Image (cartoon, rainbow, N blue to C red; front, side, top):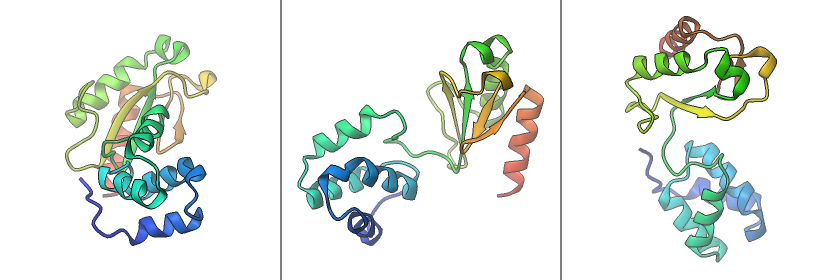
Length: 158
């Protein structure tokens, strides 16, 4: 897990947005881009620097689904479970990935912070079902075996 002790990068993000509280969403997006989630220390720091209560920042961070308060893996795998993907067997793909990575419905990120596996309601690529994305790159017509091969490729790269 990351711990923010050097706030220079946070200061750069704040400078980019002119320390404007109205830019909180963009500031949080850049912060998450840096750490792959929103560390508690970063939110407290932003609260102090922007003059916004920590509770207000948390409310913004928890309102938007794309923000995460928990660390995510280097590779964020999103499996579509919308109607088109579900009927074309997206669940066995999810089960295979969870099995290979020792993950579950409640444990979604590997200990080494390499992989996070999430389900989403729809990825908007119904004609390519079943679909998954890895860091927002779409992989169409997925099968459990193709998903395993994809995992092996990413593991090899690290």
